Length: 198
Image (cartoon, rainbow, N blue to C red):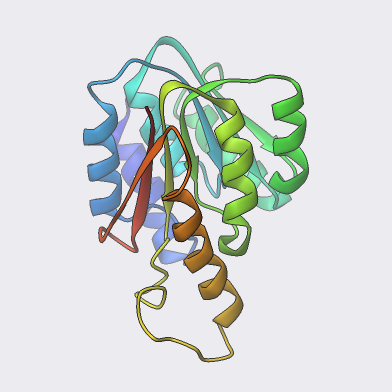
């Protein structure tokens, strides 16, 4: 993999304030995944495809990634980055609203070893429910930004972010009470949740 080009994608996204995975979060996730057999990945929230490109490093030889992005301009940029990195045959960008795309994928009985959620924070419950339907045995679901700048675990109640914070609080409560799923919340980056199918 062209690490110099990947670094340029990361720096450019940060300079333009496009939300991408924090370095410590990425490092932790890669360590969790590296000793697993990962043939299929689903990502909800592509942005510029930085995380999808990083995740491709731990894919098995014939593995693939599906990644969903709602914004047309990001889809175009993501595809350009994927092509530059020589990963067109490994990463498939799906343009659409994940709330509409995911139920269709469930109907198609798609299955994944690892599902990464990093999109609209207020919709995490809906994304996660679909993810559960598509998760292979021994699979992992990771959601990013679940602590939302520390607001979720604080007594934050200001109007500006109240809806997102309350929905994330409900999300964290929900994932810890699902039969057959073991979840943990980690204070890494902006907070991540990891759910293992057991």
